[in-house]
Amino acid sequence: MSSAEALAAAGLKAVAAGKYADGIEKLSQALKDRPAPLWLLERSKAYVRANQIDLALHDAEKALHISFQRANRDLMTECQIRRSVALFRMGRYADADICAFWALRLTEGARATEDDGQQNKVDGNGDYTSRVDEVTAQARPDPGSGLATAMGSSGRSRDASLKNQAISWRVQALTHLEKLCVGDPGRKVTVTEKYPNIDGNTPAQGSKTVSASNRNPGDNTIREAWERFREMHSKKAIRSSFYQTETTLTTDIFVKNTDAARFSVTADEQKITTGESPSIQLHLWGKIKPDETKYTVKPMKIELVLRKETPGKWPMLVRENAAPFSKLSSAGPTLEQFTSLLSLSRHENPDDLHLPAFEAGPDVWYSSLMETLQASLDGPKAPEAKVLRKDSKPATEAAAPTRTGNVPMQPQVNPSSASKPADDSTPTSAKGDSAKTSAAGAPAYPTSSKRGAVNWDKLEDVDDDEAEHSDVNSFFQKLYKDSDENTRRAMMKSYVESNGTSLSTNWDEARETTYKTKPPEGVEAKEWD
Image 1: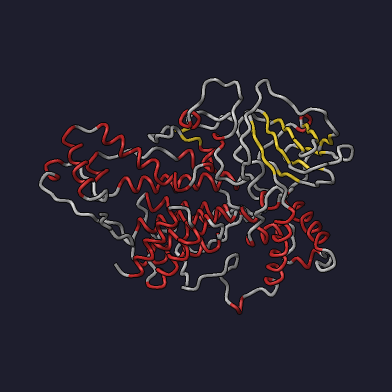
Image 2: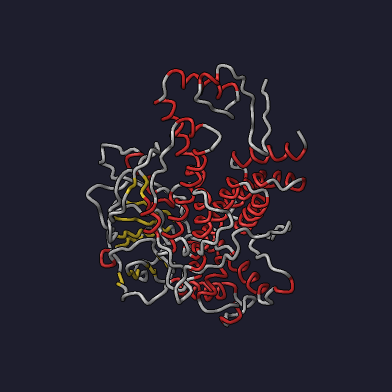
């Protein structure tokens, strides 16, 4: 094994173990030897986990270009999916859907270079017009075509897995896109090439790949403001948690010794604003009943109780595009998110905002900029808000909710893990939860997945790695269970002898064959003592 392959193998192992920084370092060293698409894809995944989304996109597009040159359809499909994931994390939902659409077309056998016109589906305002109901209406389980086809060289099971992933990311992207205001940057189509030609230079985190001659002189000013904002934001972050029942959501804001006489809360359908000490804005994920919002000021925290307009679990507390700008999030926005929201406020440069000088007072500068950015999240003018005053007790449920602790305000949260009423004596399995129809009437389509039917409105809660493997694994389990004795013998013999790299369902062929280990490209088989 060459040194590059050894480094790549170590990098893949580190990424699988969640050691992303170590995995990125080893894969980067291996990629200096040769730009293997599989290694680039794994590094792209690691960059997503490390929240270095610009670098994840760069790797996905570079792997896509190489795969296109090699005419490898499966790799092109996977690269477009990884490209979609990165764009989704950036909040570029229109672009994310287009890339997932291209991946889906590849799984359907379309020509790689077909002119599908997906990028041209925009209205007069320049907003992308595809809708999630179009995708869900077309989504159907992909039936197998017999055991031999499913297990043979056609790779049909792999195609089905990639198709499911492409559909999932389309649904997620369009679901988030439809929550954005008209004219939001996330609704705009900016991808121009199906197979972009990415050079070998890796961009710095948060940067855009532009030439020096085309660089905007204001870029340095934006980056400087972003870096200052993130630094101040991390210092001012407030610890919080939320837990929920089907009808209420309780948020704990851990601030000590708040003056209850001066504290107030203003509520409207999708926004909560608190008065001074602390001053917080929450652009909520879903709608609430403002008149039924209550709060309690305690020595160690403030407790907000919100009544949901529509019963059901929320996957997160605030909208995803608003989470990085909430004082309850310590992560802060990426440069892409910061720039997009600045643009939404109709300013291309922080200097246009006429902020107080940072050197004269960082706190005042930060507060002024935060106020401007949060105002950009409001979109069209909301209905008149309800101002609430001190309340002695929070709203109560017939059954008290069970505390779940801190819940991150990001899409990977699984709503089924949220709290249940304490007196619910019959636990509900994850499979049972996933098979339910949502309270809003969203359909749960039939599937052979062991996790049960899929609720298309909650696909953002499925981790991309889990979505990649679950349907294929359940397919093989069902295949083995429903097979006759000779088919099972063939499957066991081929699988064991090849160390899991081959699978046959033909016993007449399998009993005469000695199977050798055939690892995928970029991975080396290793014997263990």
